[in-house]
Image (tube, rainbow, N blue to C red):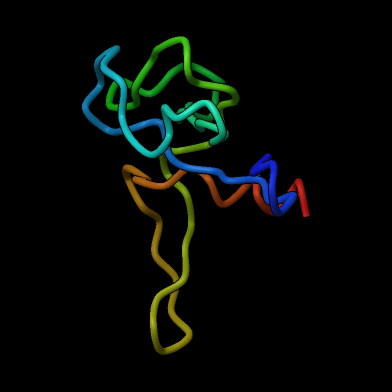
Length: 88
């Protein structure tokens, strides 16, 4: 939590598929979210390092588009939406 304002900062761990740190997710004050598939297996494109706090679905996610349309995303670049919904 951001200590001065009691705000939880959440960011995607990164999409390079390496163990490198990605920012802002790798700051100690940010919850870092990696991506997993439907079988809870780490997504090959998602970062994996000691700063990752949690994982969330990140492959084949149905999302919304402008004009009341939906699309199934093959590779979700921001797996933060579900943890944020869970935490609120």
